[in-house]
Length: 284
Ligand code: R5P
Image (spheres, rainbow, N blue to C red):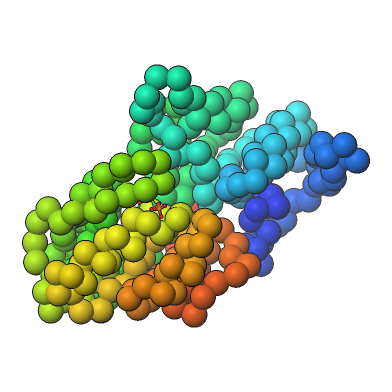
């Protein structure tokens, strides 16, 4: 099986085992992309490892690559290290685009044997696309080793916190998050006691860091000792890194799903590729 990495996953190339496929990617002078498969992939299995974080060029490149591979006769398995637009999976008010569905249409036009998404934001995406959601539990278990309590900052992370807590014999605690405005959050405690405990907050991603900062401020007010964070995807939008550096959070674990050109000392990047490779071997 040949492995194809898009521009957004080049940082992972050296960590995977296998034969690499190659393609020409070039930008015409008007800014449009061009893709041409170099290898012979006819009737061969190929694994495409991509991420569709911004910019939207990452989508265009992936769609063109899938089309070129399909036309060349390859049997495609697609792994999303990050699936962008997944958070826009429902209509909140009339007049909005259902963006998660729109982007899924792009992939549904191809005959793809398997689609695997690394820790998708919500299972609601299954309404629009057939895929398997790979949540890197082993990574979370490792990050949780020296924490007394596992905390979900919002409803979407309840199952994640519960699975980790159950596996390690710890307590799980749930917070509730409301959004007064887009990209703004207010977090409240709905059960449990964190006084005198070391906490691990778990979630799928940090974007603006609003969720995590509000949650950790609340937990500190409630008497939590050390607060660590473990998320799969580090997006770090706007001034998220600055806010995180100034916060009382001790360590922030993220995976290497996305490349991180700039980081701060309290962020630790953990590779999940050995676990992901094991998962792929079992699944494919
Ligand atoms: C939302 O439900 C997600 O699970 C994350 O909690 C959220 O997207 C994080 O975004 P931010 O860092 O901007 O609060």
